[in-house]
Length: 269
Ligand SMILES: [Zn+2]
Image (tube, rainbow, N blue to C red; front, side, top):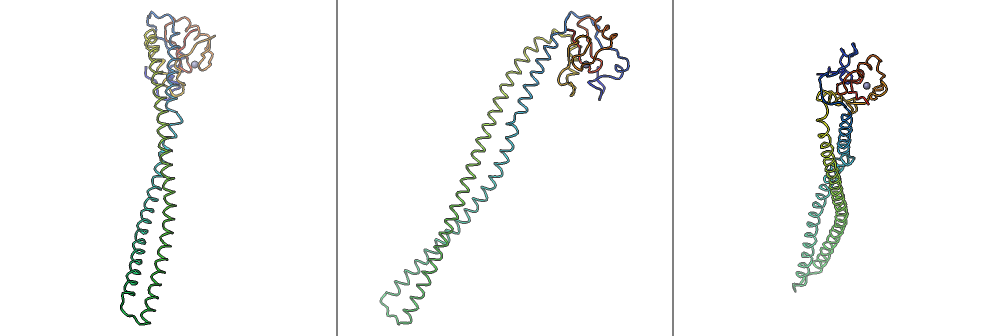
């Protein structure tokens, strides 16, 4: 039986209008549908286990960590580039300082090489040497400043690297938690399915098919069967009209009877 789209739990208009209940009427050897409720308990346990695995909070945390890693890696790349740039400048400064030291030294050698110098030349030499020493001092100060800045950037780099490492470790831990739960759930589902498979053959096919159909409806809460107690559907709580109740009770126990309102398979208790 195909269920009309949009009907409440697959309740057809014909059924709604007539109030006629479905039943298979086929002669079956089953005398009791209680195992259907057992099968339903197992199905609900499988649903709950799968839901637990699907809705693990760790699953939500993983992408947040991954985004964090990407963000910090970008910052790390910028900081590393900054450090490389400063190291290049520092190299240039160091080379310039060395060159000035060589220039000062060679000027001194020249000054005291034995060639006679007049007073003006001597004064010019002293002035030039002082200017070189001042320049050297200035460059050395710049170099010190750069080294301090490099140290600060290195601190940031170390911080970024440590954040990335801890995010990665946390991600691995979360992934392990997820794997463990998935494995637990798989074991549980396998066990439940085994029990379910042992029960299913005892349930008439049409009953099982109707049960599955109703159960698959989003609003059924995964419950395709329910007990009929004191003339009431325990699924939607509707009280059956006495004529319908009488008809149902007259059916063989294995016959498919469904609640006229929620369409759940009714199991007489
Ligand atoms: Zn009902």
